Length: 285
Image (cartoon, rainbow, N blue to C red; front, side, top):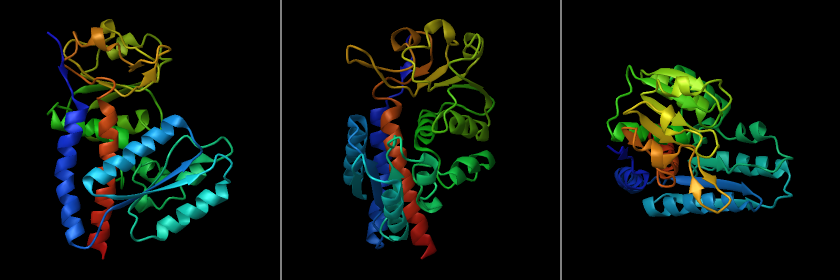
């Protein structure tokens, strides 16, 4: 029996419809949620990501503005822009589109964003606060995964979750969030010896390594929930995930496709964080 497909596109539409009502309520009370995006250079993938975020904001009623700098911009220019946005009461969320050019210090730029406007959840404070379960904003991709599990009513408490990948953006925060929700968590990497012995124990398997189709059917426990965070472009231009979808779907209980799985929920989580920030601003007025 084939796995149930977790439809990230449909789920994103449903979640955004719910949150759009909160935007309407805020706007009627005089607070229009605002998101500022900073992009440096003309990386094609980054340009597409930013365009998709702006489009999503427009559809849900969030004000958005893009601050585009040339590839040769100096770090000081970006820091000055962030400082002004930190003080702007009409902006509730600030994100810097990664990657930045090599002459930038990523951590210095990210940590210059006000903690209460860090809707990407990348500030060291917010990442560190995941350990205590008290972060202001969870990183968007792990947050999107948690929304998927919640909406599909996939149990987490007492389950064994295996996260393959240890990035600061996905792997590590994903593990912390699953742990906070009562799972027993194992963290692996693409270099883990005999990776299969760990992945076959997973009730929930989250894969974020950037290695095309590295997880095959023999590595997955029957009935497991498989969340594929990876997105890779093959030499023929085809997109695929870190999971060999066509074979794993015959073993898993639930599985996310690529594209159309985690991706739409990542942007949805960004919208949710921006609205949460606006709501907190309203409560503090």
